[in-house]
Amino acid sequence: MSTNSQTSRPVVRPLIERFGFPHLLAVTLVMVAATILLGIAAKATGSGLACQANWPQCDAGPYNLFPANLPSFYEWFHRFVAMFAGFAIIGTAIAAVRLPDVDRRVAGLVVAGLVLTPIQVVLGRETVTTYTMDILGLHFWTAISIFVVFTVATVLVWAPRLTADHVTGALVVGAVALPAHVVISPTVISDVTTYGPSMQMFQYGVTLVILASVIVATIIGRRRFDERRLTAFLSATAVLALAVAYLGRQAVNPAFETLYAVGAGLLFVAFLAGVGLTRRASRTSRTPASR
Image (cartoon, rainbow, N blue to C red; front, side, top):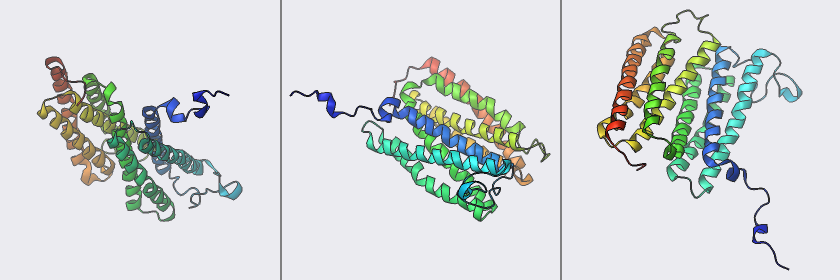
């Protein structure tokens, strides 16, 4: 009896074949960003210890698996989303290692994000069981590191579809987002009651947008432009953006207010200059599709 050669293949194709690795990576990045912002909400509402210092459990329901009130819901929901973000990171790392057509640089970045994830989980537990500002800071910056790693990996995967216009567009986004970052920062909003949970979530959301914009501009700029001074300028802008993100978090301390204001001003000038330089480079030179 003859058999069809296709019967040896699974009836249901693996999810990664139908969904695509670039989309899986992009979804994972979104989940990482959502986890960060929900963590900010939990901190800003004072909900970090609302589960009665239980971890990973909360303070209600069978085995304390569910929240008992609104504050504990914030912390519980943050952990809930973080759990699925962790699953997404694991799945993305497995796919990156096993798929033959995934760039090894991308695979290395995703695996680095996977390595950072259990560290972040442990730090998350410590923010509940041993709450200190140092642990809280490490927890935040480890999350930002995971976000940056996955943003770089995502941009590298989507890079063949991105053009020089996307570099200019990313810099425009950064130039628009930065003033909002300053206006809603503790440097301008000195009233603690005004700088509430919504403001903090919005500001940190803007922080992620700024970091993503400079990563896009730097990586795609290196692929689309040949001028070394321009690519070096874009790299320096990315470093300055990281410094401003750090100073923005420290700006609740008056000692950092001036540094943050100066850094933000320099970054805004860099964004505007970058827009002009990349537009001119796009008009005056024809660059290869990729390197």
